[in-house]
Length: 504
Image 1: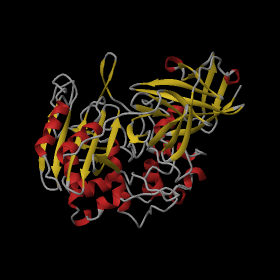
Image 2: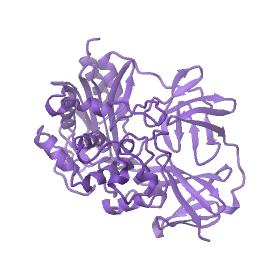
Image 3: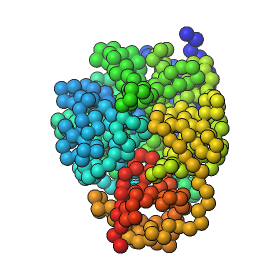
Image 4: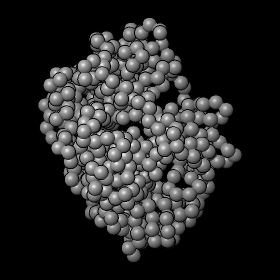
């Protein structure tokens, strides 16, 4: 085992925060072993209004870093719920497409549970629209399709965590009660699981995103759910990670349970566990997770072999926290990170059938609007090295072949299509969700009054088109796929099953 280079890790962390000055939002990076905080560095502002500096004790939203803590909660109650239980055992309102998915697959991203937020986007709701827990559960109960058959693919979605939280609540078990007992009381750490973005929390720093005119305060109207409801500081997250590494008392075996290998239906292993992902840093296999919400980015990586790790939290969403965490841990472990690169021909590609598409750039690819970096994998192959956005691809003549999310794929290049399919024009309704849209003059129209958007369609061929929807800090490229003469579907990477039928 190589000696840990804490000096190099600290230097890498300090380089990462140098551009966060006294006029912009900031963040903190902490390095630790199983017993001690080995370094911490912070920069930038916790609030652009008060000019308070960002410190290791500044409270932020952890976003999806929450997931492994929630999975700990689920594992703590085998008397109420099992990973092998179908969701319908606890949520009988669900349609079979979602109800037959097991709790374990809902948590390990292999279940195909549609993502709540992206589904709301596809029926015209903004990120700012307020939605509460009970109506959102009813929203999922109306869904007749999953994104893909359970156990055939792994792709990121928050929807499974929302449903499992609702299942736990049906047994009288609340996530924040667990956080209170396990973390606030048990470890003395100030973490809290919140219900709504607008709930007040002492010390919470605003999150910021940047548009063309400057910084804007982040906001989300949707009920948070255990997919991303925790808030706390970098310091608190580091101390929690130390408890996982030590594995003492009732933490014994906790980290192993969260990171235990999970499998697809055909027996192939995946690299996503229960709210934690396996991640190679050079030759070292680490575990951790990231989080992103409007105005916030977080990440933590730990090495169980050396009992070391780092956390990074920020109140600005222009930061690649995964890259920072990997760089810090590579310096600590004396490892070398791979360089991006690709043998794929840049351009726009579309699957042989359905709404699947991909755009290839020089060193990255965006499948269904989910962009990831690409790395050379030998013999013409490239790999995304991502457990939840898995791509392993190569050129096959003009086509691209390989795997996406562990499922076989073949993409053909999109050739210029001059004419828009004329049979798309008209009014369309999604009767299961009381949603509607209009296609007129080669554009999709959604919204009402001043929020109505006209989004030009780009034909891909065979009844498929792309259009771009802008929503606050986000821009979403959505695929419209014709299923039948009077039936279409809209697809994003985490939500591929919202159907509309012709109304006129």
